[in-house]
Amino acid sequence: MSFELRKYYEPDFSEAIFQQAPNARLVPVEIESTAPAGFHAMSIFPEYFKVDGQWLLAEESRMDCVAVYEAGKILVKEFRKLQPGELVVVGRTENCEDGIYVHANGFREVNEKGDVFAFRGNRSRETAFSRDYDELYDLLKHERDHGKIVWVMGPAFAFDHDARAAFSALIDAGYVDAVLAGNALATHDLEAAYLGTALGQDIYTQKSRPNGHYNHLDTINRVRTCGSIPEFLKQENITTGIIAACERNQVPYVLAGSIRDDGPLPPVIGNAYTAQNRMRDQVRNATTVICMATTLHTIAVGNMTPSYRVMPDGTIRQVYFYCVDIAEFTVNKLSDRGSLSARGIVTNVQDFIVTLAKGLGLQIRHHSEE
Image (cartoon, rainbow, N blue to C red; front, side, top):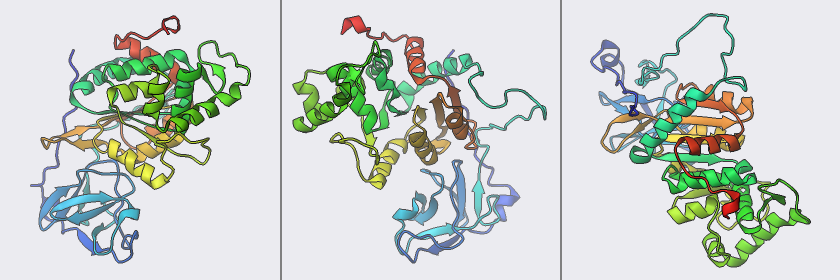
């Protein structure tokens, strides 16, 4: 059975509510990085704005940003990017009263209300996820040829041999179009490839090595000595692991820095807003986003990912968003974003990625083969 995207239903702008709606109010920015009073804040849903009698869709949206009218289009900008003179939409209503319409059910995802009292309404460790895996297999096969798959990753993958091998197989098979992570994922993945450990523990046996607590620092230092990750991989003849697979397949990875970072590695972005810009550049045209074992990165990417995407041919399609974490808090926080396309899976991410790779029919390199 082939995968089919859910159809998008545009609003019927011939209806009286749209015809009688006023034009949206456009107020110029007076102070840099500051929106006019009464600004309209964007959601994750498709939003339309009436300008000169025409309803315009904000094509590249982001939650908690503002709508700016420019050259016949609605642009969506972060507050920090606003410049004096730019025209910002103001109005706090969402059903045409201010010339603003939030189309929350364009994909016909009405949440079916069941009994007032019911067990297991949220997703937890007791939830069965077999159907989720089956849907993911079909979705990823579709997206490999027709979309863009962005993975948001915490460092847990680097601590396990099979998880690293499974994700590397996904990269080699074309199921990864971008990776968003921090210094820790790349550091421990490279440490694993270079010294066979992650934070000093053997990635296969989980036994601590003598003086192993130096290993991640030695790895960072060696990469910095080489000048770059590609040069480090070349000089040390490293071909295994997540970062090596990204480099081999020219898959972009954005490493956002943290106050906790050691080193850091050369490509880590120390400025938080530069990192945010680089992350959004990858999310901007993503059609499936899978976040795994990283609460802060997951929330950040969740905030910048709308529920829809306008494709190059002008069609509007759904964005699929998955959150995979052993912590129920993280999973349910993202599932409560207001879109049924945000799906949560509560499980160990190392087991998840191995199961996913095997379900897609990929060969995972065993420890004895290295």
